[in-house]
Length: 312
Ligand code: UDP
Ligand code: MG
Image: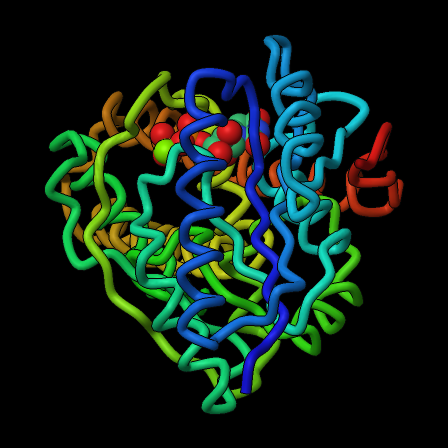
C-alpha cells in the first residue's frame, strides 16, 4: 500500500547545497513512487531557519519549479532543533522524514524506513554504522557523551542524530511536549510506539561548511543532560553527604589527637586545604544548580519556540 511521504529539511545558510539536495531528494521521491511505495502526492519541506544568504530565494525558485517542493521561512534563526520542529508540525503526509540539508545522512535508506513504517513501526531511527568521516575529536567526544547520557539515565538511541521517520501519530504526540529547551533525540524515545532502526554510513558534507560550531554543540549537549536527568543534582547531594561524613570522622580524629597524644600541633594544612576543597565543591554545585534554575526560568516563561514568516 503506497503512503504519502513528507520530507523535512532544516536549512541555515545552505545556498551551496540546496539545488543539489533538492535534485537528489526529488529523484528519490520519483524512485519511491515508481516502486509503488509512495503516492504521487509527496512533499519536500525546506525550513529556512533565518538564513542570511540566498537560501530563501533558492527555496522559492525550487518551489516554483516543482509543485512537490514547499518552503517554511522562520522569522529568524532559532536553531536546528526548532527548525526541525517547525518542519515536522508544518508537514503533511502519513509519515514524515527529517534529514539535514547537507545530505551527510544516506537518503537511500529512506526506502527501508518506509518499508518499516508499512510494517507498522511509528518511529524509524536512522543510525550511523560508523563515524569514520568524523574528526577524532568529534568521534571520541560523541562516544563519551552518549555513554554519559546513558549513565545519567537519559534514554537516547546510540549514534542516532535527527535522521528519522515519524508517523502522523508520533508527530501529533510530539506536539504535546511544550518544552522550550529542545533536545528531540531525548524526547522521541519517550513517545513509545513500535520503533525500528535502520543503519547507514554517514558521508561528508558535499558542499558548504558545518553550521554547528563547538559552542552550539556544547549547548545542545548540556540541554540533553539537564532537560532529561536530575542525576547531577542527586550527585551534589551525595557529595555533600560524603563530605559531612568525612568531616565527622575528622572531628573524631582531631579529638583523639588532642586528648590522648601529644601530637596536636595546630596545623596549617588541615585548616587551609578543606577551605579550598569545599570552596571548589560549593562553586561547582552552585553552578550545576544554576544550570537547572536557568532551565526552569526559561521553561516557565513559555516563550514561543519559533514564528513562521512565510509558507510556500
Ligand atoms: N541548521 C539549522 N539551523 C541552525 C544550524 C544548523 O537549521 O541554526 C541545519 C543545517 O542547515 C543542516 C543541519 O541543521 O541542515 C545540520 O547542520 P550541519 O550539517 O552544519 O551540522 P553537522 O553535520 O556539521 O553537525
Ligand atoms: Mg552536516
